Amino acid sequence: MQEVGKQKKFSRILGLGILLVLIFALGIVLGRTVGEDVKFSGFGVSEELDMTLFWKVLDITKGVYVDGEEIESQELVYGAIKGMINSIEDPATVFLTPEETKEFKQASEGKYFEGIGAELGYNNSQIIIVTPLEGSPAKEAGIRPGDYILKIDDYELTINDTVYDAVAKIRGEAGTEVTLTILHPGEMLPVEITIVRKEITVPSMTLEYMGENSEIAYLNVGRFTEATYQGWVKKWKAEAEKIKASGVDKMILDLRGNPGGFFDAAVYAADDFLGEGFVISKQSDAKGRVTDFNSTKGGLLEDIEVIVLVNSGSASASEILAGALQHSGRAQVLGETTFGKGTAQKTFDLTDGSSLHVTILKWLLPDGTQIEKENSVVPDIEVVLTNQDFLEGTDPQLEKAIEILSK
Image 1: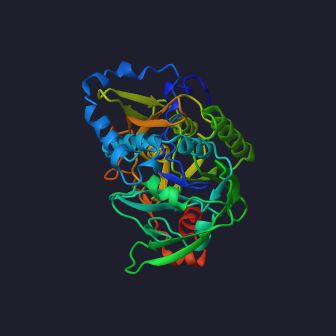
Image 2 (image 1 turned 90 degrees about the vertical axis):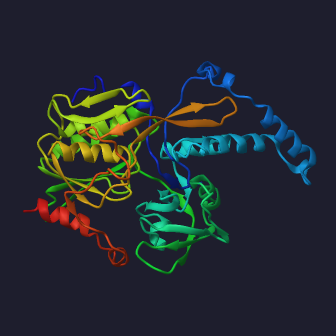
């Protein structure tokens, strides 16, 4: 497949609206950077604002607060900025302090982490576990997709707590413990689950072969990010070439628990399955202008039969890929309804090491509808993975995919 046109300007824009609870559990992996030469006053907003009240409140607080000497002025500024950005009420538009930015970058590059190994997100403004990572201490301890987090150790979460607040309390060094009070979906009573943090490495993708005669390629794509877009494409191409060289004609593409990443990576992967002329995805900008991303001629996996596995932890770029293959009729989608996150963010790296992540684009399915909670990817074949399946260590979704492809 030709790479011409794949490295579009959007390859520096990510859309992962879920947090990885790893070393610090950080990572709505949102975007890359713009250059340090960005002139923020050029946006013309600062001239419209009267900051007199802000400075007056800051001066009063510093002057009369009972423990005023212990107040860190920089922390007040960071808090004010966070409050301003949070007032937008877009969970994916966030301000990160220098420490959070450093951790975010490590998470997006897939380096090793210390933590519980789970992805956090929102459901009706409540903080939930989107999915525990495979082999993680969170999964081993009994954490399930969709679990509501009620308490972290002795701290009870409120509606004012953000995912980043939860992240700050869950993160910690390997070997230490954190106790989560969890409400499993469909159950009435919460449970306390104590998890021992450990070092975790998250591969972007793994390949193995399944079926009675290893006739089915099983590609598990954990995320659409590496340190660079080119790095992710290199890994994808290597795995796709292995599949083609193996001679198998059936494949399971597992996107369960994949929180997304580079938009271009999802487009690139979809193009490997499709012939020329299919709409893979669309993007809508702030002015309502819509850009189509179409498949091109030739693809390494164009002739292979595919089933795509998804669940409520499949988000963003995962939904783009699954939606493209479903809408084109190229693959059956099996599992549970996806997360519903169709926005892309751009990262502005600031001079003190902090960063601002701003939603700038909406991602659309091939039919032009936005990917969102009310319009996520609904599987062609619904197979639920229950709490009992989890406890027994069975995977009816994978088993059903193997059964279909083995006929």
